[in-house]
Length: 196
Image (cartoon, rainbow, N blue to C red; front, side, top):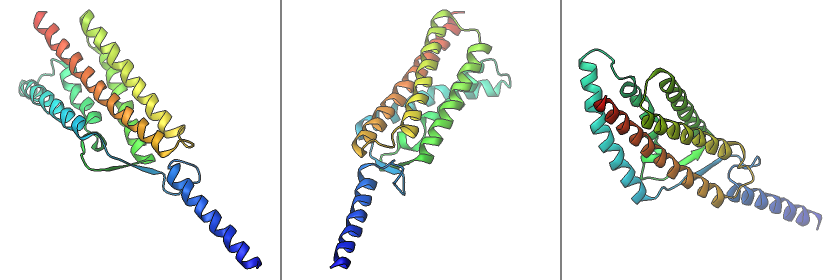
């Protein structure tokens, strides 16, 4: 009789452990801290086409600048490195992506690199007032991205799978919004150069 009770208790603990692993994917008790993420296909398609259009326009300007062998426009030069943040696989891949702690660390690294680049540009380049406003908005949004990743990485251990999925979806949308702000900032920068 004691063996049956012990077996039931053991099986109960195993079931509870598996349930915790499923419901709370980033819990301290979870062995494999990960969640599968399927992005919105329509959103990803729109984003990829915006990214492609921006890169076509931008790369021709970058190539022209490189042919002249003079870096006249530091902003054009540095946008190349900023774009790496917007081309992370989880942002552009239509297939299901597994978001692990390493994925979040990679995102955090790219965002921090972008923040450093933007701060350097803010202090090294002379922008028009309107371009400065867009730069400030872009930098603020990028700092907020870092905070969101930080929340997801360090403060979601007791969040349910559905809450974490919603946080990742929101983060995805904020990355896209951040890219649009970069695009707006860069176009304003080019416009102000032409007018100067």
